Amino acid sequence: MTLTKTRIEVNNAVFSLPYHVAKEEGYFEQEGYDVELVPAGSGRDRDKEVPEQPIEDHRAVTSYGWHEGIEKGEFCMYRACEWGQIRRSQDSATNAKVISKRAAVATQAIVVRADSPYNVPQDLRGKTVAVNFHAGSHYITLAMLGGSMNNKSEVRAVHVGGPKQRLRFLEEGKVEAAAVMEPWITVSAKKGLKIISEAFYEGAEVATPDVDPQMYAAINRAIVKAVAKINADIRPYLHYMAREVPADIMTLTDDDFYLPRFRYVSPRPYTREEYEHLHDWMTNWDLLKADSSYDKIIGAKIAAAA
Image (cartoon, rainbow, N blue to C red):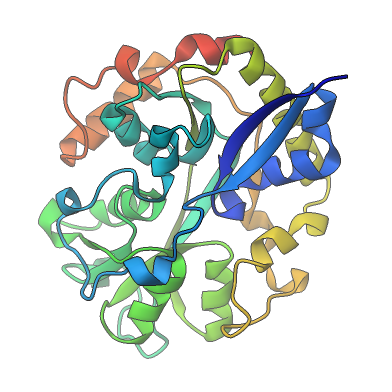
């Protein structure tokens, strides 16, 4: 059988684990596809893209960040937090659209130093929280802290970059808290940092216009198989996350992870109702244009084929 070749981006392993598993277990090949997994920001060094001081205005940071490859034609699909994907689809010059929820239901935690006087979300009123603007850490920080504050200005999410860089800024005293996902929550716990708040959130798949419904349906079937494999036993695949932590920071073992933090489900289409709820939340925080409607952002026909 001749396999159809395609390129799909993978970012942090906790978000893209089903793609790694589908590749490792041969599920893509079973569906007739030779899938090349392209690392997010391939060839770029995050340590060299960190600002000298945290950036406070989200308008000063492009929404694409490490996912700009889809605009350059480097791959045809990728996934990230749903709020960020909605914003990037609005900003897309190539008509890339959100096509479905992603398989990963991820969690991020806001952590502070062990000697910090802060213990509850209200303590972070007006305090700097390191995030990556227009990514999950940014939006989930607004969601976690927004309900504890009297007004939006009391939530001070500031842009630093990746999770490793956020923790470095925290340890250097450049910020007062940091939002991180796995494996960096586990790293934080092993370092003795305090968790102030933690929340789960969904993500979304985005595809270019050349991804036809039949292709997405085949890729989706492979991902559904991978989700079942992960949920049967995630431990054989934890190394994908552990390897993201440089050896000079620490070495993680399977026993270090708290397994209930990892949640994977079959992808599903967006409904108009849930999109409109997200749209209203994002526009309320000045993160999305009011005219970014469901029909402009969501490629519903592609997901419906699956």
